[in-house]
Image (cartoon, one colour):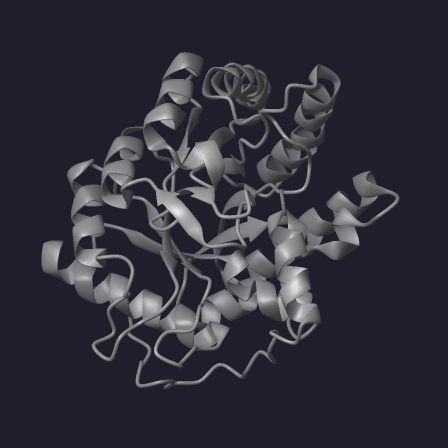
Length: 330
């Protein structure tokens, strides 16, 4: 299967990258909306993956994340480990992670924003049938649990990639999550799973795994858009989706165990609505679950009717949409 980072890097090599623009007050008709005193039932965070193209193309420094998020009006940060090549490619990963912690803590403190979670990628498959590889993946994830604790985060997000047989996937996923959640207790860190392709996007199966683990610090990170279960080429992200789990049903099933929520966005119409997801419907589901924490903006951006926003405009459009729809139900 093609991994997320490999897919993005391939796109950039093909010339699909772009230069990150200076942060505008206006863009594509989407003005920045101030969230202050809007009495929303949630707070707004920013997922660092929104800047993945700028980071991979060398046009955006991942250590500028806190400053940029603050300028865009966010108060919470969701880091993505794979975006830090100085860490992921380091021969001395222990020291590299120490530097990662210090730099990001300093930036967050200077910009008065809150570190919320680290999304862990590229550290091995937690649902592989190979016991040795699975245990290695578990050990690799522990470094980031420690890092998240030192950064004051509440959670780490993990993926459940590996076998495609449902029963085996559930068995291996439960084993890994149990071990990681038990380990993370001493660090006051939650281990949360995102619907992130293949069997993990089958919310019913995923919730069976979470309930099998049955630990208070093991939960979910529901993503509005990641519900593709099967793609044409059998990959995770690149080819066309041929089987998708109902996203509204999936979010409703995942919310009872949610420690965070990801508002995925790709394209917008002239009214400012996301064309693939009914945000008002999603926010009603989130609110009805009793959740009142952060909702993270994660703009991925795909072309729609011949138009495609840059990262800053896409982030701004998503933020505005959340605020405007949130006002209707808060």
